[in-house]
View 1 (tube, rainbow, N blue to C red):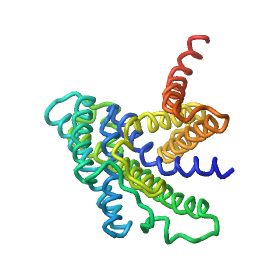
View 2: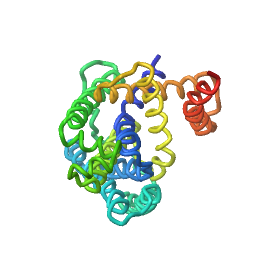
View 3: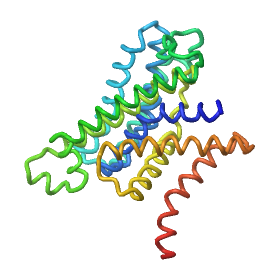
Length: 288
């Protein structure tokens, strides 16, 4: 049971990543590969600041600001320099590898005996249950803030930019600015996931973001499938189902390990599972 609770905790850590990819890919229709770099950026800054005994609350502000800056760079390259969004993301992600390595000063920062976000939390005797409460508070606050923002006039303009850029331009909205802000927001949330997972697992690693976009994409696709099946219209419910997708995704991986599949094959299983999720709706529609 503890094994599956750990999988749920990891999914909650990845909730910001899932929402970030939902914003970039489903709202703006931009395949943002910056995710791999901004996730590690969040972890790297968290490790460095905690080692310097900076409080986790202050570290959070720095992490989210740095993630937003990384996303804004991608948005600027795409929107202002007319570079393909996929290439823009790859360029920033590649640059962030050197930035992250320079910040860390080494490839790995262990956080043993370092006070983290979860250290002061002693609501219950069980450590995992305490961590669950802290993460749940984070996720609920994030959902309420992002859900509210996307329902405001500004949020509606952001969503309209992805749905019909020509129409929203005709209404006088600066779509380039919307894309930059949207990507900044998405990568800020991704960096938040790096912040949480670093403290949860107890270390920051330079390679922790490699392929992480697949985890987020899988979560979003599962969430989108649930949204389609349940015919959900509310943006807040959409966000909740995306996080539910992250939980389902991590539970599937946990089951895979629990039944004895070699841990070395986990990335292969992850890629295969995402491929299955992507292709299954199309296969079913062809059969009909």
